[in-house]
Amino acid sequence: MDALIAKADAAQPLSNKRKRTHHSNPKPGPSRKPDKTSVSIIKNTSLPHSLRSRTNETVDAPQYKHIANPKLRRSLVKTSTHIAQSQALLSDAVDLLPSEESGFAQAEDPLERTWRLSQADIVKQAGGEAARGRQEMKLDGGPYRVRYTKNGRHMAIVGRTGHVASFDTLTGAVHSELQLGETCNDVVFLQDHSFYAVAQQKYAFIYDRDGVEIHKLKAHISPMRLEFLPFHWLLASVGSAGYLKYQDTSTGQLVAEHRTALGACSVLTQNPHNAVLYLGHQNGCVTLWTPNLPHPAVKVLAHLGPLSSVSVDPSENGRYMATAGKDGSVKVWDCRNWKGAVREWTLRSSGKGGAEVEWSQKGLLAIGSGGSINMYTSPSIKTPHHPSSQPPLYLTHPLPSASHRPITSLRFAPLQDILTIGHARGTSSILVPGAGEGGMDTGEGLDLYEGVKGRREREVRGLLDKIQPDMITLDPELVGSLAPPSKLTTNTSGGSGSSRAAEIPFARLPRAERLRVSGKADLTEEGVSDADLSDASDSTKPQVVNKEEKEKKKMRGKGKSLKRYLRKQRKNVIDPAAVAIRAKIEKQKAERKAEIRKVKYGDEPQEKSSALDRFRRTSKE
Image 1 (cartoon, rainbow, N blue to C red):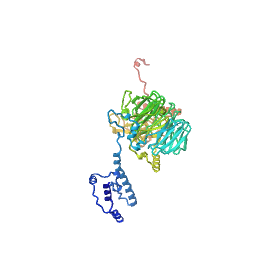
Image 2 (cartoon, rainbow, N blue to C red; image 1 turned 90 degrees about the vertical axis):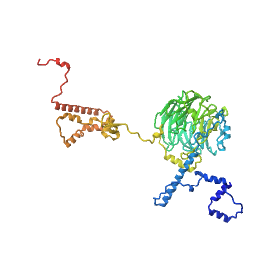
Image 3 (tube, rainbow, N blue to C red; image 1 turned 60 degrees about the vertical axis):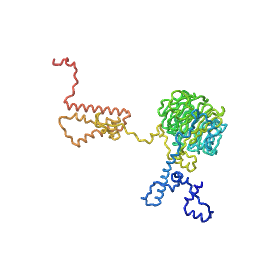
Image 4 (cartoon, rainbow, N blue to C red; image 1 turned 60 degrees about the horizontal axis):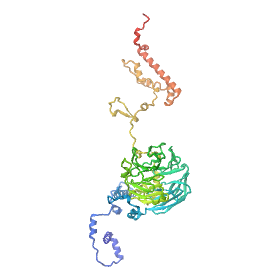
């Protein structure tokens, strides 16, 4: 401490020292000698960039000396310096991020198993702030379903009997608490904690932070599950009627309404990577839906019985999907090829309503079945394994008593190692080491300490950057990519051995040639072809054709009334009058060809003689 004080005194300017000595009379004492340790450290170390003063930072920022206005020049220099300093500090922030394998519980002894750790052992080893995540809320309106906001600070719960509440998980403050007095099936936050939607018995309702009813969505009839797409501002619902509906919360319009034709549906989740919705049906099928397709983009027979839960892995861009059936089986699928389940196993105990599955931000799979919650790590469940055997457990947590069953909801808190369980007696939050993502991206709205001003700016930015529903596809990289070159080309030189340079793209062809290649050209409008004109002339005698006469022949027949009538008619419309006129023109063409042949050969062409004509008796005989 003395060394630090001496260093601080030496760093102060001389004027401050004089001013302090002028007003105060310090007592004489022994002079302080510099600490050898501090001297040796100062020579080889320095303060990190995050702790240095901005005035001492040297950054390469443009000075804008070519700008004459001094006020504008100072403003640009200040902005450029701030950007350069932020980029310089970014490297330090990247070094401080945890690695992908950090945070998980590891066994020290080869005979030790991580699944033997209880919540009491984990809370004892965790820090004081992390241990606050272990909570138990005993409520009487169960079974409950749980939802978190995108940053994980606010949580909303809804009970089957109509108890709805939202509160701040960091401070414990309750925002609102409602007793709706009717059956409620699901709850979901909208763009932030200011609004949330509740799937009630007859319709879906939107409430604000204080619990005041804002909207009544009559188009969503008997909803069972709700999902909100944050980048598209779409509220999706599916219910007992079997209809999947998309509602734009920014404009209030019903964007799409799809009839699944597979009966009532109570399983709905979204892929956060491409915003595709996954539905689980009673016949064991999983269907993938987008707003721009009236039919499912993908349909997979996942189980031989009804599905109870579906979840998509957010850690690997939505490549893996986990499904749980009411038959007690769990399957992990690869969404890139759909060639079968990567891993499949049967649960030891499953409740009457089936199992619940949920992926964490770092690829940890939690399965709630019967009276326990089992967790598995990514390498063990994503590696192909043909026998139907149990993968190695990571952690397990049994429910206190049978009165807490059934387990109706599993939700991992974003950016935290907390798993919240919704059951018949309330909610239980347990600690799962390594489940949450350690790095916080404040630009994506993942700031736990976001203020009112920051929330408003993020909401306005989200509205300006809102993605249209038509851009939702299975491959999100398709949007914004360049259009592929046209494969429809025409070889002008002819022959199979011509070079590619002689091929003309379809877009560069003349209009008449494009119509001919696409099969839309009306050939009846063409006059006498050049081949017919060459037949009518003597090939042995060269002919000199005047330019005016050539242009006159080129425009011959273009102004006739029949040709004008045919040009006005569409080629794909079958009109009896147009068909008769085309037949008449074909007849005239045939007569014209016959006259040309008569001029060329002198007489009418005789019929072709047969082999038996030699035996025919003539009139002279």
